[in-house]
Image (cartoon, rainbow, N blue to C red; front, side):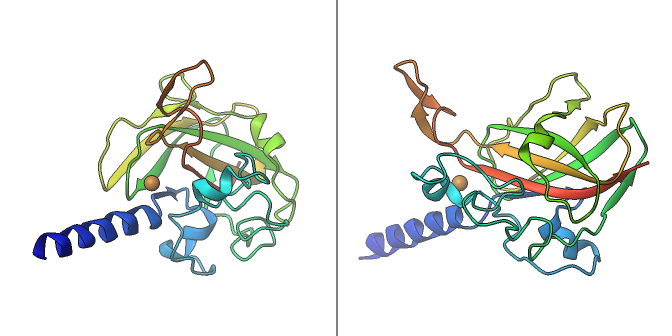
Length: 215
Ligand SMILES: [Cu+2]
């Protein structure tokens, strides 16, 4: 009976673990986390769980793996909660950077799932303009080591990553969006070549947007 109680407890603990979110961008502060840093923005206590609806929804027949630009469910009508004009998309600028600088970005993972991070930048013409993935994809940012992917090596519970990201030399903007994209690697999936492995196929994905200016 005690063993059963323990196994039930462990099962609950672990499933609860995976239902709580796994991470967020703290610096620059992503839209849903700005309230933690003294900004007068709406409170989202689930700000570590912007996971495109989580695996079951992200990879359903409608969403087909796609994510909202700022981590909401792709099929939600825009503005989604974390879009401009949505609940958390206030347009408040969280950070101002110098043009072409190497910036320090902080990612907080409550649970690491290996995989990798990428960062993209979209210069918009106004705070109200909806950011698009097409715009973000035009500026996949380079890291200090010259690559565009930061590999998450630690497979642990709570970890903070300080990552240096290079801003493009030519871009200035009063309303830029910096997007953090995290593709985890905790699940075994179809690699498309007849094999299966960790990191292939459907993986947990976390996406955040931060409003910044580059002067
Ligand atoms: Cu998970």
